[in-house]
Image (cartoon, rainbow, N blue to C red; front, side, top):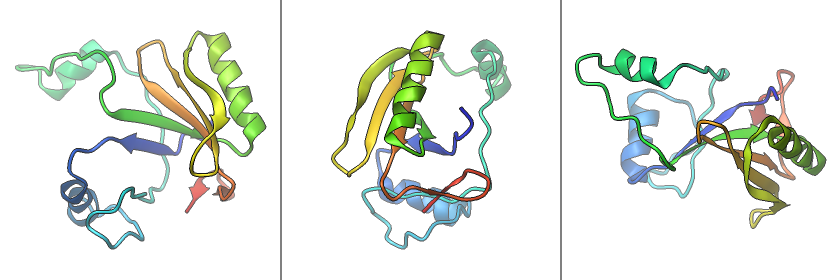
Length: 143
């Protein structure tokens, strides 16, 4: 599993969020609307870091660390597959590694194929393939 290219954030106010990321932080996108249904930002790459949550909350604010939450927090991680078969392979790999399969592989309304699993810490991953997915020479999904 090495194509961890997209981090999906659930937002309450798309206009506020797009202005923050696009206009405030300068994340690159072709989206010009301030209130699209969905927006993708181009990044130069993503790495996944595992870090003990107890240390992370203290790193955020040692004097007043955020509360460690449980349950779905409105964020998913994504693995972008190159085929429907790869979606199934990754789900089986996750299952064998101890993940909880939240949604078995299946066709999805946007024409692709996807599934969901949650890792041992409860983070949700979408494993998805789309008929228009193209990857660059570094296996980064292109839009």
